[in-house]
Image 1 (cartoon, helix red, strand yellow):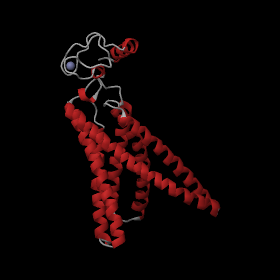
Image 2 (cartoon, helix red, strand yellow):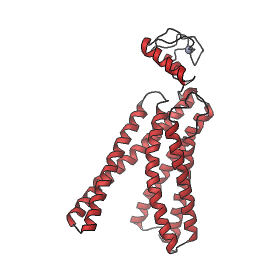
Image 3 (spheres, rainbow, N blue to C red):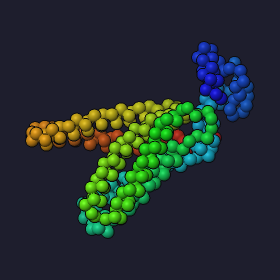
Image 4 (tube, rainbow, N blue to C red):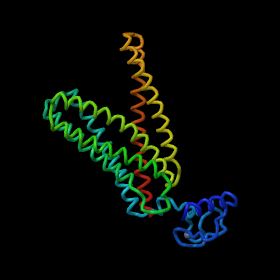
Length: 285
Ligand SMILES: [Zn+2]
């Protein structure tokens, strides 16, 4: 359906709330003309609204939805591995096991492999839709996300080279720059991923995921504002040697860290909900 056709269809619907001529039921093909948009197909009982949502993921190519689902699965898996690594780090810090360069190298390798896993997951999750119905929806956020992912892949490759180059003064300062860049790009990719997930959620039933994205975005804004204020106090305190400002900045770091932890958990829940929703879409295809 061309965008003009869809706009006409939406205008007609907003006027009459009845199904326009030439709209078959997507499941059984029954002609739904004249029925209420809120009703159900008299033949198979599927919601009439489904016929009016041609961009719905259920009607997309099964291969495409399978790619998205696999992507979401890998992203969630990488987060699970990350959490396990964090727990292992804490346990080892307490017990004092697996120390020394061998242990550090192992963590570094697992961390890297996990980073690659996450990037592959996001790449799949941001696959382009081969269908025409959804060309406009979320295309920009999807492209922005992919550009940021490409930059992260490049950063990952550069840092891998830097590790092999070894400890020289130049390599060390380059690593600091690369890590700093990676943090900025990650933050941008985080925001882009939320905007993209919202457009994806708009193509699935319910609306629960869309609302969850809004909550995560709001918490994210609070974290960024808190972090900027805390950092400003710390910087001012350090430059001017004002102990008071430094103390305020330090105190602000506690709620900032706490909110960051909440954000992290909410984000993982959102991704897992998306994974489940995509699984459900596949089941219904
Ligand atoms: Zn039907």
